Image (cartoon, rainbow, N blue to C red):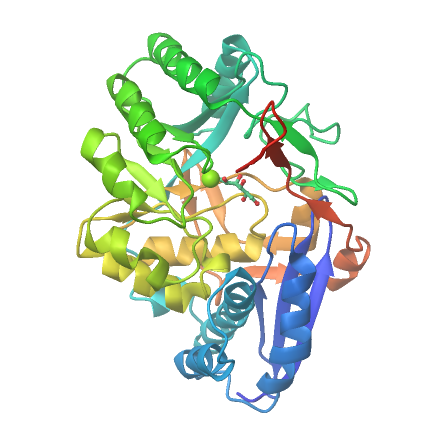
Length: 412
Ligand code: GCO
Ligand code: MG
């Protein structure tokens, strides 16, 4: 299984995706996701200029060895660009191994540990009424766990609520344009922490009154709080029994979570911008979180995220893999194979891709009654239609950024 072709395919069916396609001399083809929202072309260059030439002539069956070679031989290690590029290679090699073995990847990882993967969707609204409608729409689609994001009085825009015109408003679960916005400069949004901290508990109270105690509810603070503010929020949300509070502080300061933990029993999820097991070392060892939020795509692939999750399992910390639409269907499939196989699966984020994206990436994973399954096709079970992909050239797009009322840049 000698690799004789390594192609990087960029396509933008509603949003940008970076896919690595490896072909072996004996005809096996594997694909991997290397999409890094808003910085896609950096990964393209890393793969095209520095990784693809090294893969030609190497043995596709040596997944771990290839991972270690790419990670260590670069000398400069870690970081989102490097780890997304390595993830794309790792996924493509697992895809090839599965196809060569005639088995879905989850079988190679040890087989299924459950029947399906509980997944949550994103309900949002500027007002409570809009939010309730969005929750009901998600329930009708089978979602049994729901992330709740809402407008905050006085703020024009807020994370988690689609604000751009291209959002497919007629179809409340299609999020392909949210929150990345096409254009030459990131959109500016506003933020006010005190107003947010006052408002959010009232929203969760209203949601519990309307939907009762059973529905698992999640919330994402998107790195915007200081440790003491995060502690206040966690405490004020305790009566509403959240499944998790996500990214309450900027994730790079792991120690911050100690203070949050001392003050609240609201479960914490963190890690969508982490990329290695070392980013998690302290917070797993000190049991400062309850869920690992990394995507396979941003954490060095199946091989590396499995190591993070195996480490986490010693502390009863579970997976909550990142699954926004900026992870391509290939990255989503990889998450599903991993999530089905590991024992410490928690929940899977699942935002549905647009019909356009689905026309480029043909999937064999399924969604029914609130549960995902990766399917039983050999490999990852996703194919890339190159002709269709070619219809959608790359378009520059950026995530928004925040400024406070006095003009200070704030975490988005
Ligand atoms: C989530 C995330 C995303 C990110 C996005 C950035 O919990 O799903 O916070 O919505 O904002 O992945 O590219
Ligand atoms: Mg998040």
